[in-house]
Length: 73
Image (cartoon, rainbow, N blue to C red; front, side, top):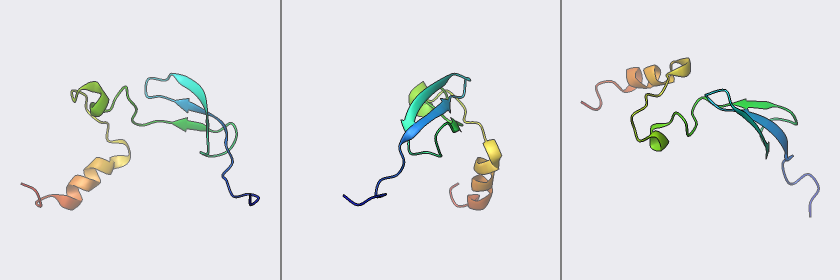
């Protein structure tokens, strides 16, 4: 097996949208980093039955709508 072929697999902290935290192992970042989720099963319409609204963090949805306005009705 080649040395350094696989990414580093280490422990990170995940923070959900409601503030709950848990530890998991991942290739994200480096040992001890924190991954803060913008969308998770508590907020995404696919898991909540479609009644929730997605937050437009960083203006991504607004930029998308502006870029493609007029294309679809």
